[in-house]
Length: 485
Ligand SMILES: Cc1cc2nc3c(=O)[nH]c(=O)nc-3n(C[C@H](O)[C@H](O)[C@H](O)COP(=O)(O)OP(=O)(O)OC[C@H]3O[C@@H](n4cnc5c(N)ncnc54)[C@H](O)[C@@H]3O)c2cc1C
Ligand SMILES: *[C@@H]1O[C@H](CO)[C@@H](O)[C@H](O)[C@H]1NC(C)=O
Ligand SMILES: *[C@@H]1O[C@H](CO)[C@@H](O)[C@H](O)[C@H]1NC(C)=O
Ligand SMILES: *[C@@H]1O[C@H](CO)[C@@H](O)[C@H](O)[C@H]1NC(C)=O
Ligand SMILES: *[C@@H]1O[C@H](CO)[C@@H](O)[C@H](O)[C@H]1NC(C)=O
Ligand SMILES: *[C@@H]1O[C@H](CO)[C@@H](O)[C@H](O)[C@H]1NC(C)=O
Ligand SMILES: *[C@@H]1O[C@H](CO)[C@@H](O)[C@H](O)[C@H]1NC(C)=O
Ligand SMILES: *[C@@H]1O[C@H](CO)[C@@H](O)[C@H](O)[C@H]1NC(C)=O
Image 1 (cartoon, rainbow, N blue to C red):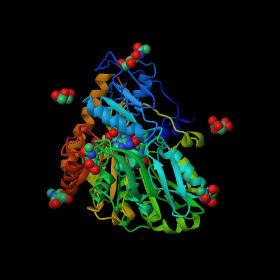
Image 2 (cartoon, protein in one colour):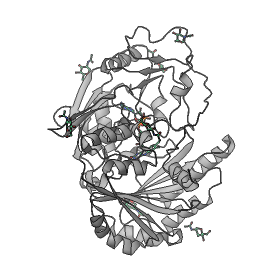
Image 3 (cartoon, rainbow, N blue to C red):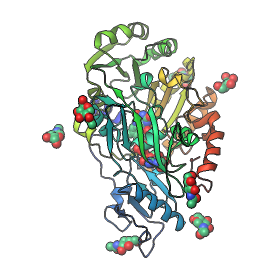
Image 4 (tube, rainbow, N blue to C red):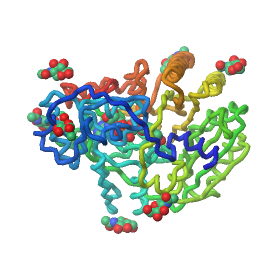
């Protein structure tokens, strides 16, 4: 693997090799007997004394560790119901876990982790163009399985991300400007609520819950067991594209984005990475829904204004575009594994007309100056198109007037003192940045325990309604974590 390839891979957080991280566990709640023995759970239960425990409690971001008293691998919906009822009767808290990619590891925050990995059905209905997708599926296998039948759903680019956390908080990827967020494509949700009942939320039943789950659904209202998604037929070909830019001319690129970003064809979505320490310090990667000739034509104006130093177009199948931008092998995309590493990230969602040149310069300066042990890069995701055509109050996903999102992502490779200093540095930068440039919105899927006013930043004017739905469906706040509704 070349160094630049390694960096690319690291850029998208999907390290190619599995690091074995040893997490020191000092279980907080030791209990002499099997606390869940009378719960009628058929699936496996892993306690801290199990040799699997350390590995099973290690999720994606090892900056954060919690020590749950048990991990329950639900084998079916009944197991979910019984675990909820039993935990409630034992006065224990639960957090649901799907892909384990929460940036703050909120899926292992509870006394009991209710892992839904084995709720992994993908049942496609060719006639209605819908699929029932179990809440434990990962994005890679979903893309793969749907592609076998000529379908896809729009979602993010990392194959190991779980569908539940992802779609319940929005879900943005390289198909979003044409097809919306993952949450926008949900037709119905089955969920086990706080009293252990399995209920359905869609446009006809529990509409208020359906609204709340599409954007504000992570572990606040219940444990989702399955989603019904609207499917899209895969186009015969899509065109992936990759443009390189001279970092010193970044303002030229943003002038083009600010001018064309909201009017450029919905057929394309892109994500641009700024990583000053890389040999490709400014690279834009995207997918166009159509053949290469049309992609080149529709992007002509953007190219002539933004002035890339090189352009590449790759006409390919939709699934190949998924594999390409996962920076993983086909096998890893189809059957993803965890890649534990330490990181901290910040999210800023930018409204039109875009940041001033000072705002861009300031991000560039920050990413250029962070210590070697804390390599930091920025990812800019173009919004607009179908994402912005949904009204802000139609679902809990409020971010409908955004031009582009910025994610500032810091790897933490130093000792604990260095890492802490680095985290303080990125936190301070984030706070000042929001103030200086009047940035109000942050993306709830890049969840950040150090964010101020998270209620408003994640949910805006939808927050009050989310609270009232919470009162109705989980009045005792059984489902909670530090940033739950
Ligand atoms: C490497 C990486 C790449 C990413 N790429 C993208 C991207 O391209 N686009 C994008 O939009 N986002 C991306 N994200 C963010 C991702 O969407 C969120 O981290 C998401 O919450 C992860 O979902 P999960 O199921 O994997 O995580 P989990 O940690 O399992 O869950 C996240 C939250 O959802 C809750 N939850 C999990 N399962 C259920 C359930 N069944 N019912 C109710 N609540 C549940 C958990 O309790 C937790 O609060 C990425 C994250 C990482 C780490
Ligand atoms: C591990 O802990 C569980 C629950 O506390 C208990 O039921 C089980 O007997 C323990 N197993 C061993 C091998 O000690
Ligand atoms: C339940 O647990 C909470 C927190 O651990 C505690 O404050 C509360 O008193 C407990 N309630 C009962 C009925 O035991
Ligand atoms: C749906 O269509 C695909 C592709 O045409 C086919 O392989 C699959 O068997 C069909 N499934 C059903 C249930 O008809
Ligand atoms: C549990 O919740 C469901 C759905 O909200 C409700 O119909 C039912 O009455 C509740 N059951 C109990 C025992 O509270
Ligand atoms: C991918 O998986 C297939 C089938 O399991 C296997 O034959 C092949 O060797 C794998 N390829 C790589 C590169 O690991
Ligand atoms: C960025 O850094 C340059 C060089 O150190 C400095 O001149 C400039 O004022 C900085 N700009 C911002 C917005 O921080
Ligand atoms: C900051 O943003 C808010 C909301 O977008 C807007 O109402 C306000 O006028 C802005 N303030 C400044 C100083 O730009």
